[in-house]
Image (cartoon, rainbow, N blue to C red; front, top):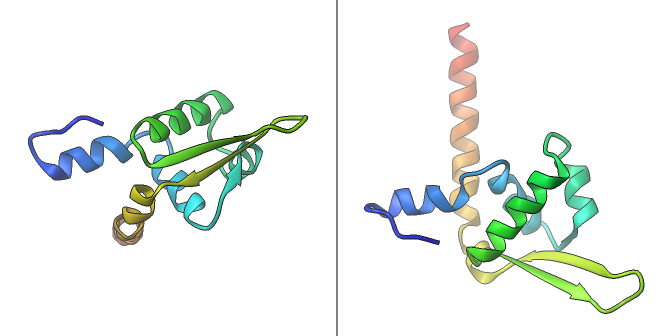
Length: 107
C-alpha cells in the first residue's frame, strides 16, 4: 500500500484491479476457499484471481489461512481493515448501478 497525494486516490489505488472490489464483497459474506471464489468470478482467469488475492493480502485487506491437512486447504477471509472498507465498496456498487441506469437511458 502506498500513500497518494489524496486519500481518495490512495483508496482507489488499493481497490482498483481486476475484480478486487467484487472479491472483497464476496468475502464479506464469509470465508471462501480459492475454488469457491473462482466459481463466483467466472470472468477472471485463475492466474489473475491469484494475483489479485496476493495484492489484497499484501495490502492488508485479505487474510490467507493454510490448514495443515492432506490435501492442503486454503481459506481467504477479510481482515478488520477489509471489513471496514465494505460500506465504501457497497456505496461504489450503488453508484455503479446509477451510472448504468443513466447509460441505459441515453441509448
